[in-house]
View 1 (tube, one colour):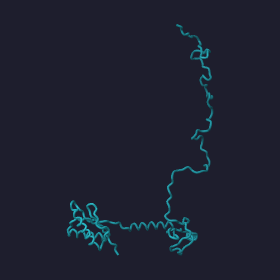
View 2 (cartoon, rainbow, N blue to C red; view 1 turned 45 degrees about the vertical axis):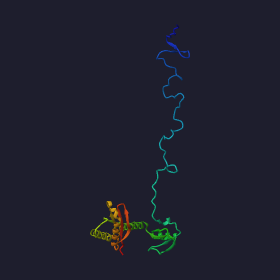
View 3 (spheres, rainbow, N blue to C red; view 1 turned 60 degrees about the vertical axis):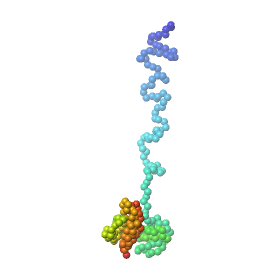
View 4 (cartoon, rainbow, N blue to C red; view 1 turned 90 degrees about the vertical axis):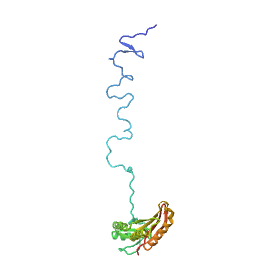
Length: 253
């Protein structure tokens, strides 16, 4: 069997046939297969100096440029709240060609819109369109802020004067005796006199629903006895186990 040749000595053959020194202390030749040169020299096949093409896409380099902003639309800052519309058209917002002026500080009549605006300007007041659906629209010359204040005050007073509807309930049985009936009749009369509505009903419990005709007769009698103070708003109606009648107070003359 052939033995592999053993190499000994100071050098051994390289792949290209040229001998290269053996040992860790011998430097490798520089080049494509050598080590990187020390220092700040360029990389083989690379770039030196700043990156070509300016700054990276999407970023900024260097200080912020000074001076006025470039002209153009400003970036969107989200949706704006809608502007509250005025309840009345005033001054130049009035679109009619002529208006009817009313009030104590002017001579009532129909005026061209330009003349009406001039009159309001001379008085240092506002031309207010109070009835836009009229032909021609009706306007007043007033201070607009005071006019709105008076309108709000008047509306508040109307709400305070509006009476709340109060409903009083009166319950009967299908076989109510005269003493109980008269007692509840007096209560209903006082309720109607104070301006409250009366909701009277007959409650049928168990097999007493068989006497619903008697309950209807009782409620009609009740409404007839209250005829001077109230009027029937709803005739007797059976709703489940109750037969109901509604009586509202009569308006005082």
